[in-house]
Image (cartoon, rainbow, N blue to C red; front, side, top):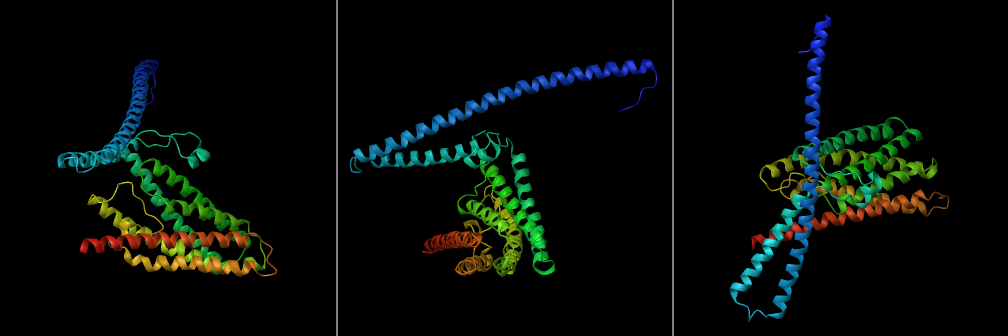
Length: 346
């Protein structure tokens, strides 16, 4: 309990107690640094052992393939063939186990994180920290979705100022840039988000940056209301709808052990959404075709004689890239799941 000494004797006694506490703090910190050095050595040793075993397993897999080629099935007994299959399955299990282990070991950053952050270690070394960062990422998306919805509604229906539009586009650039950095950190810590659902945020960042630089003029005003209405639908309504239902679905699937604990909500459709979230597909496809409509509108505007802004063509190409990526990725997921369910029913 803290108190304020009043007499000199009490001050001396308080000083002696503080000296003892200071010595304990020094001993604790010395022990902490010692354990930290031991942990660093264990991390390096474990990473090296995993890399070595990966190489050996790869060589063994190649050797097994050579054995099968040099010894036709007729010369190999059924026991030998079963042993080869068992070894391959075990190698696959070990590879997956190594991926889980590496999620808790420091690793080199990818190109994007290296360019943005340098060689800073972004690996979180315990599950609580990983889950806390993932939950913060999800909350960040939800809060910014609400802010962007209100901002776009204000620009569309209440206030029509180019400066306000510029602030909105700057917010979009910052939002998507932040998402790409946070997603890269989450991927380094074991999140499974990959492919187009990561790359489309880079395209969205570029698109928002181009919209930010588009000067005030007749062509900008021609596209402004269409763009803001699209943002209201896609960034506001659909994104909030996806977050609300995906987060609930992921919670249930993680509780059943059917999804990884570091899986994230995404702005699209993935295979795990097939059960319970197929009702989202019409909203998603409508948004995809709206991107196509935006692209066609901009390409037509680019053909106008008064079109001098390069932003018109760049935005048109960006919306076309978003449409093609979103539409065909979603279509591929739906097609694959349909074939899987069809094969199971036969």
